[in-house]
Length: 511
Image (cartoon, rainbow, N blue to C red; front, side, top):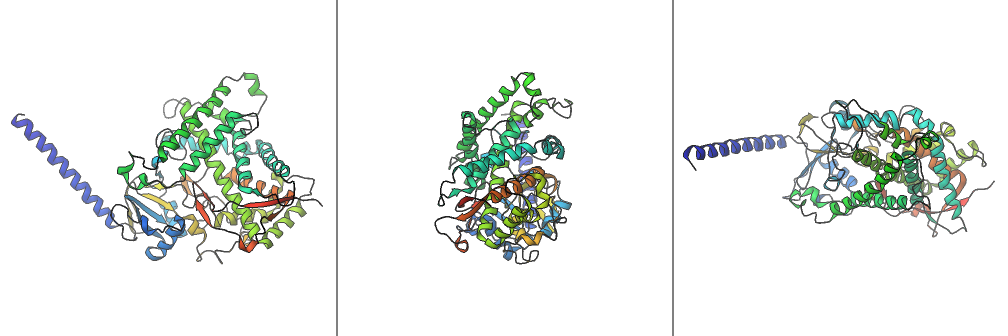
């Protein structure tokens, strides 16, 4: 190598070294101003300080008492994580730093077939493509006029659940897995909204396979993955989580792709004889071809379809199962709600959406359930797209930001007798405390740009489903378990579920 070439190489190496060293010093300078937190251990960070028994949101809440009641830093391996633990800090985040913290932390198992693809509403980074998908959801899927048009679909799916419960009421000691019935109802509802069909119909083998693969994706998606915390292990995938999850994603995509092809091959006359569903909206979309795609690709449609199922079924199931558990755990509240339902709606009627506004205690039970048992205790993880200053601290670029809505909902400074299940607390403030994300002590669906777009749908389905099975059945605990002895411990998956699934005996109600 000639002298000048050698000099050039050394010069480039020197420039690179100076740049890397400068970035390292900048990074160290930023880290000095992080929010307080426990001292991390080498490699593993604070993981072993979280405890092995407690669920993470509870461990985080206890650590916050010692290191920062509002905002705290934890190191999950090499992953810098800032945890928001108070309504005041949540207000500061969503009011003044919503855009810069609107990024999305994408875990290893989500990368690949659907991870941070442009078509993902959940994992795509904040930007023009994400805003387009959000606009389609809010203006086409969850607009009030669209929801009014699909009222009959929701009613039919919930009544099908009621009838399936009737089918197992053979004797007084037949206990059922309550959560499974809610899950099947939610899955069939999304199937009808998306494809205009019952995917779990006895004649639909494809639907049953799609149900299986979607369930496996939710199972693997809820497992802690060491590759997220120690990046050098991500190529090894030591737990096989990414490999297994992507297998089930590909299979689910293949089946959903078949449904999409069937629709595209459907005769025009068939479309005119039924209501437009979500798949029609996606296939008929046309953009300007400049700032927006001229049409959605098959991959984008597949991703949206799949995320509708994964986001809509487990969260609905979690909330409804916890609501039933709390009612059976608190018989006086259960009795009060049962009286409201049966004095408002006659036995030969089915609970309909027109009744919901006449059932304030039912709505309060749903809100109280979401306060104590938010389905996503940390929401979906946010990420800092750029470094920012908040509450006097620095949040470096690419830091994961978790909002502990579980802890915020149980904060004794905000809620009187915070650990008590008391729906009455929402009766006097029903018009003031809503789901819109502006009451920062109650944000089970999030707040700001990335809050859940399906709130209008959830606020209809949750009271309808819960009220319907309470109106048609009396419920008692099986195996001689007393209300006070119920196991109310939690476990974490994709959503916050009961550690031991709720089993109860339905008894058809007759006057």
